[in-house]
Length: 328
Image (cartoon, rainbow, N blue to C red; front, side):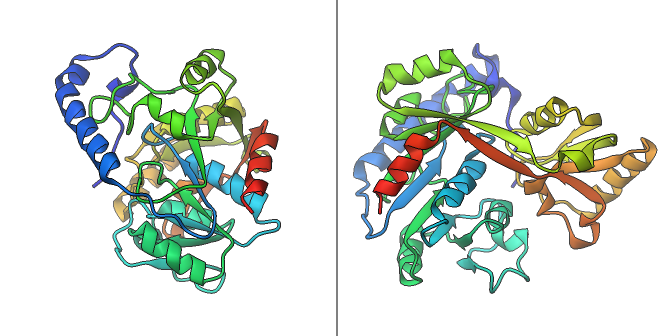
């Protein structure tokens, strides 16, 4: 099942659909509250660092997790833990340098393969069981890619990610809006990472709820920008926030002829490739996508598609680095 975010989620004023779905959001909220109340968080003997969100998709969560891995991996043995959203396999999969060659996104999900470029990854639907396995494998700490809503796991550090353009959308819970939890849940976080430009209005809203929380900004940079210059592209993607990708291209003066949006975590088929390559030929241009999409592309087509290799600059990360060091 694939998901495309409804446009009314990001409208500041509630639309007809949003109002119509609001009773379901109330039910969703009540179920969430009950689950949270009856959950007893399990503690583990290694630090658990959670990088999550309350806004569904496109908040830069995976990029932030990668940057935290870069900080910690210099001196510690760290493992990512993810459920591998979008994968069809239900079995646990351990990705390290010894067993990555035969893996594909159907079994692992796209985020796991992207994370594996920067560190070892354990994929499991049962986080508690997986954490115990990772401990036995001799790791010093775990980075949870997602998991803020998992109240059965005690986290030593909670980091919430937002996008400055979408922020909290219409401020409604699923399905009336894009929020997995109310904004008040940021009180449980230690750090906020905001992808995009500095926004004082957003900062003020955050500080009203959690005055002492640390706010860090994330700036995406295209590392392979030089190879993309002076070319025309059809940009296609199947991620949570496609317009973030398109805006990144435009902000870096990369010429876009057409934009094509697929559902989040979409598995491309032969038919999709045929349509995309025909579009490129008709417009006399190249194809470009995100690195996260690129890992899902079939091997025989990878060399025919460009992708943006992003690096994330965390502005004001010194306080985060300090807290990470305190965990050990």
